[in-house]
Image 1 (cartoon, each protein chain N blue to C red):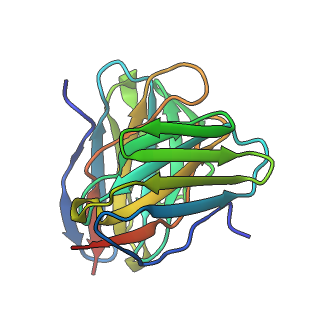
Image 2: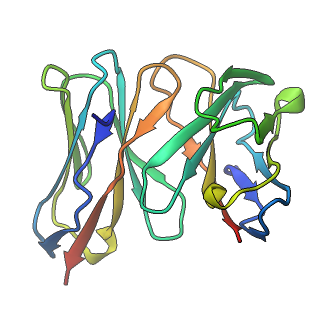
Length: 109
Length: 115
């Protein structure tokens, strides 16, 4: 079992819709959770971090964490073509980040 | 403020040659990480420095890889001799010293191609 699992996609959503990206992790001791966005050929860019159960909202982005289910998700409201990228889930227990393979999101105009 | 800087951005070398990658972290960041992404795979942890000390090098694939961070500033990652399977994108990231959950900021990466 991989330590951090994501569906590789592509996930295609129409412009203006809600995109839902999911991630599960295996280490119950994980304490920090991050979503990075990576455009093709570019470096990962941090978009959200979440540390406690529940929802965290930042603009069009909402991160959701459920430690009991070992599940973290990212919702993107009013998706735009510019949101098309690979979204990486990263989990940290200490200082080491463990990444999932990423989910490729395509927002169709 | 300058971000994490890596160079070269691209490197093409022949099997058996040596390559050295460099990373300049964000000023003041004690934590420095190296990661690698091989085509089609996830970004994998290689090692972690706290200042000049190796905190965790559990991800280093073998002894052909040598990382240094003399003086606790920039870091180098040397691959000697390079093999075909070393091809990939090598990312460096840095974060401030502190409590759990400090966000890491990534450099643009070095795309290494071994032919």
